Length: 333
Image 1 (cartoon, helix red, strand yellow):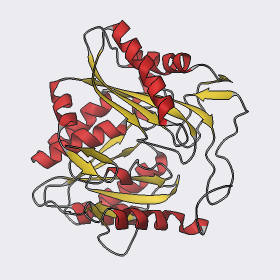
Image 2: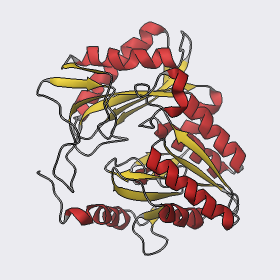
Image 3: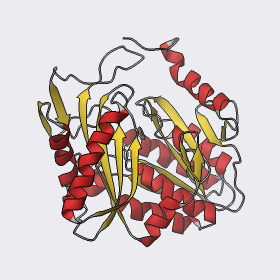
């Protein structure tokens, strides 16, 4: 294991301290628990709060999207582990401005269990909550079981849209409906080229032979749908994009937002090579790319690989994506 860390048990807390000390104008901890972080101006009185959360190891996912026009707070778990219900509840109280709180996070069993417990605690404090689950991973379940899919990088679109709606003053029902609408129109496919190494154990999250790739792999190393010899960037892009077009039932004339996401150890240059072919496929299919994001948005420590997310756009979704936002890892003027 070659990592720039101190004691593995302190990895998450020291990482959070680094973020807070580097961006004091954007984020803070409302109390002494470093596993709860909120936007620096929280709570926003009279506006809906948005709380996300999940395991560490995916930066900038979860904690990187706390800020203006995005999420209001985050509960932070250990690497690849859910935050506790108490931490989620503390984040809820810290961002509650009297208009309710939306829970927006990925569809993973431990997270669902603890967020549901936190919602019960919030109810006892007369803080209304609603829940929307990111579930964009096309490879994890067929379309007939879409509600059971994993949440991966495509949740960033939901953060952006819901955050913009909350900042403009939409009520809780409206913000939740917007988040759900974006989730329903988002699809993601990923590919892994090498495993992540867990800081606490020094062990890889999965095994993959040299020269192999795995299509559809999850961000925790969950099994994919195809394992075989490494292919060219264009062939890989075809493998990822074609299921997205089919899943979203895209046809000529449709508008989309595209996110080409690196999983932690893939150079930005390679992501742009992938985007090049995504652009070519979209042109050939008569699709109009209205927004494009290329970089690291949801990682898995040092896993090599990438994912591609599509969001089917209409005027409302595009306007919400175009709204201003600012967090330590996402700035849009």
